Amino acid sequence: MENRLSRRCLLALLAGAAAWPRRGAAAPVFPADHAIDYLAEAQGAPAGTHRIAIARGEGSLVARSESRLLLPQSEGAPLPFEHFAEETWRAGWLQGLVADTRLGDRRHRVRARRRDGALRGTRDGHGFAITGYLMTASGWHRDTPQADGLVDAVDGRLKRVRGARRGWETVETGWGPVEAERWTLVGELPRELWYDEPGHLIRFALPAPGGAVVATAVELEG
Image (tube, rainbow, N blue to C red; front, side, top):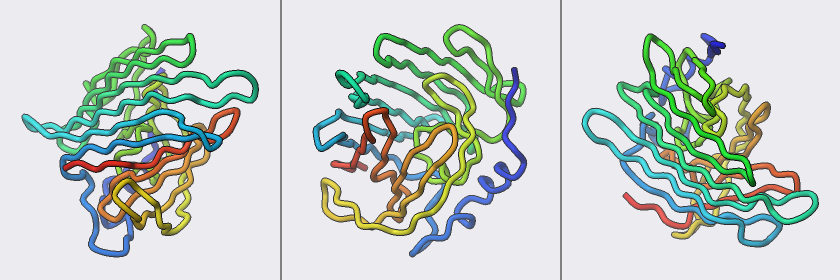
């Protein structure tokens, strides 16, 4: 089955920095190479780690995300969540996606690359194709809140979302307080995202049955 992002979403994303009003100069659509480490907590207790690394090479940009989290449940022990994803971008378009996930006893595997005008591949061995300008739900791309659909790297499906700007807040990071713009995503992938003025993802919150997991940046390299 083929999914398609709307023309409205495509036009908004291609508008780039002009579509994202900020306090200072417009941030680039694709940030400079960097890596960010995050510490997560849930219900006031440590809940794991997350890492995002962006690097360029041979005409492409590679974004890697790695999570080791404990998702609180309504009853019983937290659910282990381990996730690794690698996105390959070229000329501003998502060209490839490789992801491996363990959620409790369940495992998911996504392998896809762009060809014939669509992202085509397999999710747990089943074929899929998604057309249009695509971003994943990893959140590193500063235009993530403006999308009306995100590719979920856990299961390879296009999830419908809608973002709402909540204003600027001070976020305490590992290197001190940072002013960040908060966004709320609702729909099939609800979450909270905070971006600093250069466009780095500084904090994010993911819902879980027993309460949200909140991950905050503790080190920024690059």
